[in-house]
Amino acid sequence: MKRFILQTLLIGSLVLTMSSCSSDGAELNTVDAKVMVDVPYAYSDLELETMALINEYRVSVGLNALEKINYISGKSEVHDHYMIVNNVVNHDDFEARSEDIVTKLGAKRVGENIAYNYRTAGDAVKAWLASPGHKKNIEGDFTHFGLAIRENATTGKKYYTNIFAKI
Image 1: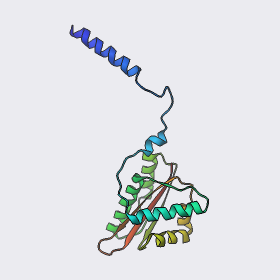
Image 2: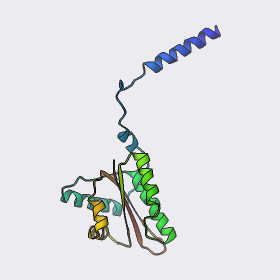
Image 3: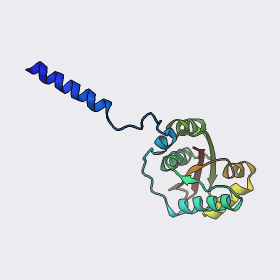
């Protein structure tokens, strides 16, 4: 009797597994699946304003507006904290951040802008646009971005990390 019940359960499980909902061979869009990396991120008004200014500029020169991804903003925030703790302004470990975004989100290309000690979003974006390398990233072939702005509690100076990705 036990054996019969086990066989019935096994056969039932196989039938359910074989007839479960599927896409009939259609592949899951891996880009969509990877973009769904769900990470909470609370944007400050300054961060949202900076992102809006970047998108306004991109649209004004005929480019697509970028979509924000919390995961990328989280990576930007980690870099801001690194710069504050180490009292540096640099792109240290950009390759690791980039590889992580490629792996987790399926990005084809990643770029990064950093800034230091700008009080307003407008000042930071204006400085980036005045720099050929930073402007190239802002105007780059990207689809998404993330941004974090953190303030050094001791000095009051702001650190900006803006990461771009084509997904």
